[in-house]
Structure formats: structure tokens, C-alpha cells
Length: 172
Image (cartoon, rainbow, N blue to C red; front, side):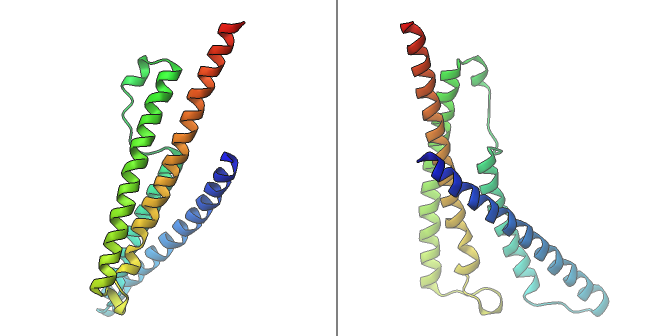
């Protein structure tokens, strides 16, 4: 069962990496084009700067989901130096569960935000509804919650495995 979810996570990871490269390349191209238009032709694309700002938002949030997958988020590792392997896994489990809950709450809040944006009917550049570029918020918080949930399950399985191994050693 866990292998299936990990395969899903790998597929999402590949899509995120491709999307990240494509969006970053497109953002650099638009920014470069804007600079050339401004400095040489004293003009620019009216939608260029807002698009680049939205691309920065997308790139940042997709990068956060990738950091979650790779375990590269900022963490403080002071206590675990003095803990047993089971204690370290327990602290890791608590950290991942807390992160999972926070990401679930942020997914809910971002979804409500998008719902409000849809009801307000506000638009961004080129008449595009503002909720469309902002949809990345609930999507990425949801992905981070998914990944922290997976990490929680892995930590729990490690705790159970260590406990089972220790119990089996005690019986022999």
C-alpha cells in the first residue's frame, strides 16, 4: 500500500521538476524580454511584470513542495543528538505530524481564500481572474500535507520496526 503512494509521489515529483524548469525558463525569458524592450525601445509588455510576479509565486511554492519531498525544510536538530533511535523516530514523527496538521490547515485556508477570490470576481493582468494564478496555494499546501503524511507513516513504521526488533531480541 505504501509503495503505491510512494510511486504517486515520484510521479508528482517528476511533474513538479518539469514544471519548475519550464516556469523558471519562461520567467527568465519574459524578464529578459522586458529589460530589452525597456532599455532599447522605451516600452514594455503591460502584462510582463505581473506575470513574472505570479511566476515567482508558483516557482517558490513548487520549490517548497520539492523541499518537503526531499526533507530539505528548515529543522532544528538539538534534542535528537541525545536520543535513542526510537526516541529520534518519535521526535521525527511528532514533527511530521505537526507539519502535516499545519499544512492541512493552510490548505483549508488557501481554499477558502480562492473561494472568496472567485466570489469577488477580481482580475489580474490581461483580464485573467485573480484566483487562477493563486490556485497554486491550496494545491501546493495540499501536496506538502500529503508528503508530511507519508513521512509520518514512515516514521511510525520505523518506530514499530525498532520496537518489534527490540522485543524479538529480548525473547531470544
